[in-house]
Amino acid sequence: MRILLLFIFSFLPVFAQNITYQNLALSDAIEMVKKDNLEINIARFDEKIKSFEHQIATGYNYGKLDLIQYAMRSNDAGNVFGYKLASREATFADFGFSEFLTPMGTAIYNASQGNPPSDMSSILSIQPNDLNYPDARSFFQTKLKYELPIYTGGKLEQYGKITDALTKMSGLDTQKITNEKIYQVKKSYFDIYLLNTYIKNLNIVKANMERLENMASNMIEEGYAKKVDLLEVQAKKANVLRMLHQAKANKALTYQFLSFLLNADVKSVQGNYQDIAPRHIDAKEIVRSNLDIQKALLGLKITDMNIRLQQASNLPEIGAFAEYSSADDKFLNDFSKHDAYTFGVQFKWNLFNGGIDKNSIEKARVQNLKTKTQVELAKKGIMLQVDKIKTEIENFDFSIDSLNKELELSRVIYQNYLGRYQEKLVSINDVIIKQSLEIEKVLKLKEVENKKIYKVLELEKIANGVGI
Image (cartoon, rainbow, N blue to C red; front, side):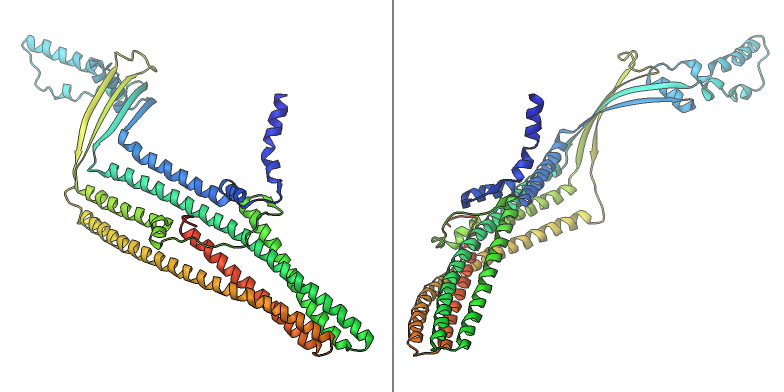
């Protein structure tokens, strides 16, 4: 039973990918895009990477503890003697005293008999075989080594602050991508609504064309119209059908794009988005909440930290270290008898490097001034963009009201001309011209509604959803 459950749960992600969503609400779609959108997930990975980089930078403050284990074997004279010395087992025999003491003892004895040697250089030139050609020896050393930076002039502190700021900036990037995807989801929903409205209007036009087609056909049979009248109506109807087909194809493409954003198969959505308008919101409030401005301000703080980081290069560095080890010709043999320790402090201060540190500080200061100017420019640019979008939305609202009235009028005029055509007061061409004017108003209304909604959603994206 346990194996069966594991098998089922292992395939749940696969089943989840094949779920088809019908009548999906906008609020549910927004939650889905936050959770399942692949670009947002990639941004979260980048954010996690920056978080680990911050932890790496702060980790240097705690120093480094290494366990070092040597396992070697050598017959090199220097190595063998060093091995014995490290394990505290060196003897005078290792210096070749056995080859030195015999001739030295003979010389002393002869001197005591009143016969001192004329030259002692022969004794001093003896090459001790035990020292120069020792037997091969194994060496095992276990060492604990701890290094700790005591003072670095503030470098490690600034590295920690900078990486922390970069982590926060990565979080802002993730939020910006999330806002962009939410904007695209909302835009897709409004595109679908507008396309539905557009298709509905085209169907009204199509129904009118079919009615006119039937009327023209009946009048031809009665001898009150010519066949060319019917052909003109059919040609206009074909144009309307072409526009309907394009609208339905665009709607299918919008659903495909929405499915890509949500990483799921979406067949239909719910909701009636007949009107969308921004609430009253102050441009300064949008500037305060705008992610690009927040990133710019965070970047300005980083340049301040970089100045202090470069200034730290003129200050000394102090580090401490401690070692504890034991060595023998057998692994971990008589550890406490052969142990040793070393500890100390290192002081380092760069006094001259050709002016590199000075120029690095000046470069950091200029970068800071540049960033301050960029932040002010960005604020003014955002405020200008917000005011421009709000003015455009007001113009679109006025145009939509006007076009709705014009569309209503064009439909009344068309109906009037249709009746006059039945009474043979106008030609079929006059009726088709009025029908063309109605189609033109439908297209223009859709175009303006699209532009308005895109501007409202763009304003919402700039404001990060504040007050919209």
